[in-house]
Image (tube, rainbow, N blue to C red):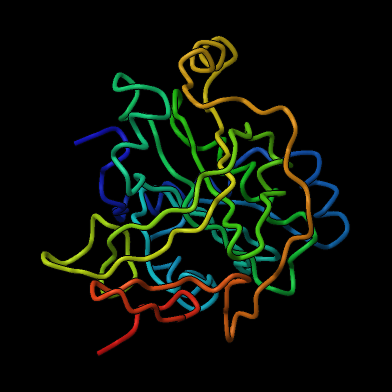
Length: 263
């Protein structure tokens, strides 16, 4: 079992400890100012089940990813956002990012969801920044901003991720539910175009560890961040800016706006 592959389960004792830690956590100056203004904002670890309403009903993918760590953003006791981290779908990504010696230290920020009414108010960057502090030392965090959905990655830019370029559009085998290749059924002939994505990397560690890990990073470091207008999708009817084509074995192309046709 790899460093980040342990299933996400929280025991009763762990929940008790989390509640205790939450009550006794050190409050930042910003939190104090927020409390004085009548607003209490904080980030804490949450369970797999607590992520479901956000990931299945609000995030455009509408499916659960591999989750190792999950954190919620709370405002006056109500959860308004979720961020999750898990083992990347591609084993080759883990190796390609920083070599075989670091493959077990790679984790993906695979979901980030904020309630629509709180978009554009820096809540997303606050959630990401505070969750990164809770990840294990010596961790490479990779995340993507999908151009098909009009995403640039401004949240990652605001939280000092390293920009490593844009991936190339490609096709790969998918499952009938639209999942990644590692989930497809044997004999499946459905292939899907994967859109180009802006790729960001964050290094978790102390100053000395970060310097060494930066040397081991295999992706190019691009100093200039990409710019452009980001698009917010309608959570009730999410559609990509550029529809994704489904390619069937017989060569028939069907526009499905990112959804696998059901038969």
